[in-house]
Length: 329
Image (cartoon, one colour):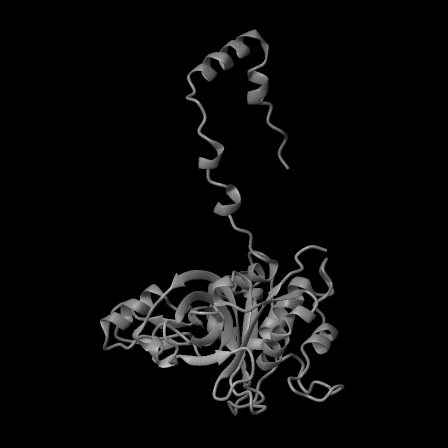
């Protein structure tokens, strides 16, 4: 460590008679201060991010720095393409991208992310395997049933968030407009069947980007439906969107709202799809009367919105969101 500088501080320079005179003359040249209300608030300029969002961003950004990144970042399934593979998510040391790795699925990634941020080895200590077994058990399973997998599935997370007011460390978020960075959204694709291992999907909100209307919104059959656009973080085998290479409008839309796992060539002639953790864009729909969830769209280039609501309704997927509410010990 270098020795402290011997240079006197500004406060020291302004002591004594000459310093006071200089300070007084300088003060006379300053115009009257503006009203405090007109000054921007620093908290608004630099909004805080919850720890689990920071950890997710750290993982994504370091993986993007790795040589051959897609060898170390993927949605992990066995060679049969139908069975989920082992889950390994590794955060390395700062400045060492070669130490970061992700081999996971949507729900296992989210679970390990919470364990890293709030688990037994942290100051918080609540996000443990026993916590998830207790509060996010196998959906619709008889009481006392032991989970067959290591981690909750997407439908297990959805069921827990639907009951989040009874789950320690989570609050329910019932309206898309209220989603904020760090909130987790999960849905059950087929509530009438236990479709293990692919039960649904779960994402984390990274940013709210306002509303984004499209002609396909009418397919939800909800007059006046409100489409809320978000940037999200997730682990998926299907990136959020890819352009129709025959449509310049579709290409421009993808350029504006891309997915870090899908690469569009500079000449717009080809695009390459990868999988794993990354950033994408999704739409979550709100009922115009109640503001509650009524559906989602996988990407801005998706032609099909899916109806989705919290409670069990025929022909609709079940969706729910939760917000981690314990950032302090």
